[in-house]
Image (cartoon, rainbow, N blue to C red; front, side, top):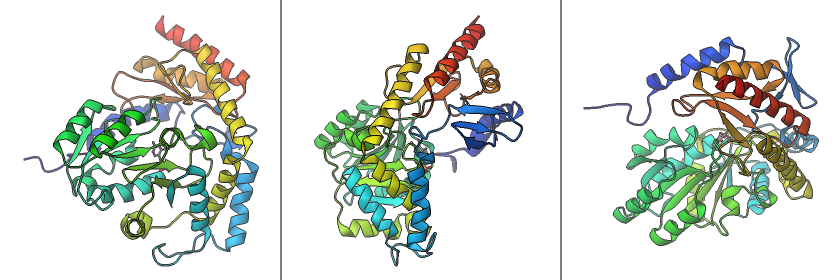
Length: 403
Ligand SMILES: *Cc1c(COP(=O)(O)O)cnc(C)c1O
């Protein structure tokens, strides 16, 4: 009888991953250290490059107001982190941020130090029925969901039944809804390779069968939607008790931390989260620097500056699409995946890097075997000249590699 590795397998993952990481290391494409200056990264060896592999899509991470927000919050609250669980005592900082985020996102918001920590705390409570109406749901994880969600499978499986489904497999989900009293689907909102969750179709299943959905929309917060509420939130008019959205504050939002968006929850359910949602309760909360930075970011989200940044990002995405066609061309999402033969990925990335552009070489196990390529990520702060030059080089070298 199989006694282990039902939902994860380090030996397999590391054996597959190591070969490629060793290659990336050997060619100087991993472990890079450099100072940020004028939109470029400068290494101590004197090389400088434009980062096309950074998720700070609006460049808010270097925004003066956000840096100032972090500093002034430490002064205002007089501590970086006051060590005691929020279930017992807390300084007013976290409440202030959760109120501000709740208003911005039109949801009940609970924060955590990261999206990963939020998911690791909440998914097991959904599995045990404590945040899913009292019944243990069948937990259906999308095959492509983010690793921070995948990691929760074995823990959820110790509370309820867990299954993995093909990418956005709505037919399977409807079938499971028909044959199970309660079902929860776990997937990314906007995923790291350019797809979007079928929010309308899932809402239909939620209304018809009471399906619960746990979305991770870390990739689209701030970059997408009015006031930057993200892809999923902007496609759901009102959050109910069957939908949760987790987001990272560490990507386009430009700060540090994670947030859970929920519909109106009973006070007892919130207490269950604060007391029992794993690291949300027993580990540190967001510190005051991260909170101050996040309060400043919320303020920026409420001004026209956010739309200006979103428009700059879109204009950069469109320019890249005009120059380099990919499967994602036309999407409003900032990530493009340029397919190249697996054997050439590293060499092509090195060539681009030497010319001043860092793009991520992507290969198994990040993507399936035989689907290697270059992941190119647009930001609002890149110039049209930089994008045009990168596109010209990509076209040149992929042509050569195809020849
Ligand atoms: C980056 C990312 C995360 C990790 O966010 P943290 O706040 O750093 O934990 C989680 N989910 C998705 C989909 C991501 O893209």
